[in-house]
Structures are given as structure tokens and as C-alpha cells.
Length: 96
Image 1 (spheres, rainbow, N blue to C red):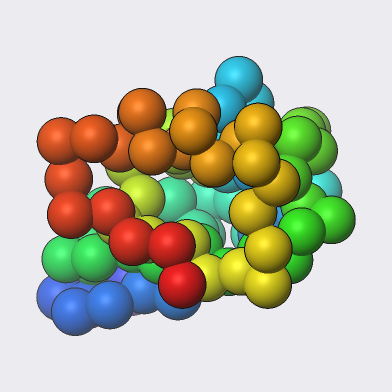
Image 2 (tube, rainbow, N blue to C red; image 1 turned 180 degrees about the vertical axis):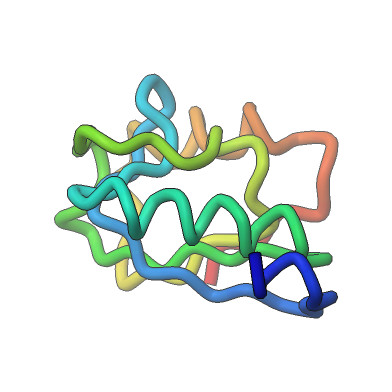
């Protein structure tokens, strides 16, 4: 309820899994619900995930990959990079 009272400029969130099919996922349902609520009150959402999180689908789905504005990572697997950019083509999506 408190989150609804804020307008958030940029939301940076670490995740447990990221895949085109499964979206942005967490192991913990409560964390997923909080992340979803913060996202909906943020102007921009950036996912932080190292290379081990790609292709991983955890039980609690939060967002579609197309709903995020950027990805901060150490490395994007080549097969995932083309899929990632294709679902975010209409946005100013950034991989950092």
C-alpha cells in the first residue's frame, strides 16, 4: 500500500531468472509482488542479472521482458541477445 504513494523515476531490480518465455522471475512470491508494484509506479525499470540468470525460469513471474527499459549484466548469451532485442524493438531498450 505504501508503494502506491510514490512516483519512482528509475527502478533497479536484481532478479533470479530472465527468459523470453518465462519473463522476469523470482524464487520468492512476495519479492515478485513487491517488484511488480514498484515497477508499475516507476517511469523506468532496469533489470540487473548476471549471465547465470539467462534462460532461468523461477516460480514467481513478475514482468514480461518487453516491459523493462534496460538490462544491466556482465554478459548476454548470443542466442538470447537477438531474442531480447526483438521483443524490445519499439523502445529505447539498453543493454549495459
